[in-house]
Image (cartoon, rainbow, N blue to C red; front, side):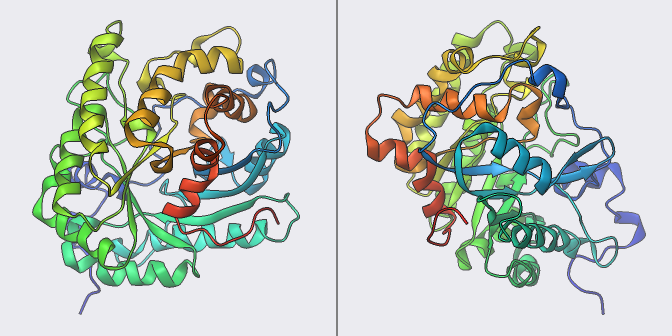
Length: 374
């Protein structure tokens, strides 16, 4: 008898149709549409931290070892240390890395959790700095299995050694081929399918959260899911996916209002929190990666301030958390410049709001253990 998730050869995840339906099962060798970092270019724009004592929990980053692009603990620690910012902890978010090479398809993503737990143990040695890297782990599971995903979640919880906090599903997709950030976009309507809702319900039953990466044009689906499962903590990634390329290029004011309207409906739902970041991805249309020089923190803060202010005004700082989205956003600006930009925007906020957005909300949502640096 096969374990849940085992498939016949005719429905193997290598099949393109299956990959589109379940993009989180794709192998990492698929080329990402996001640009790779250029170290020499980034080195032309460095800044000291504006507020080096401000506690920061990086609520969203990735780790991987891909051909031509390695970003593991050493590289992440170098970015943190070089920034001068006080990053006390971080939350790892799935990126289809270090999946198991064998076993049933549904259980292969458990390997990612196992890997990141090991990275967290490395970080806690103190050898790589004082940041508790991967203090929380967000993995990936096939929620289209419905209730059948339960044993997979149990395995992930065990593999996480007390650090596993939930799963992320990158459902971002758009019918226009110019609007693309996922190597293998998901099928439309995925979040509202009965199987997906049943799978997400298994997260709620275990006090696990669901991170969602969706574009602004898909936020109505997120809203429907959040209303169906009021006990499920949903964390919307990358400011709700405002778009600035393809048919959205050159019409920012019009489409920013549509994004705000969709976001405002989600903000009425107490089980939805919001990550603020991802502005370095080309999909948002800022074009930071196209400049002769990388942006400095003033230029970056001026560009993204309307989006950050909108997010916080709608959700409140206690439901918002800043994220680096590194190394994806490293193609557009350096780690230190990004946190300086966020600090510039938050300069006139109250102490409580600053603490919430930079650290408190992430600690609460992901139930991070007490303590600061190592």
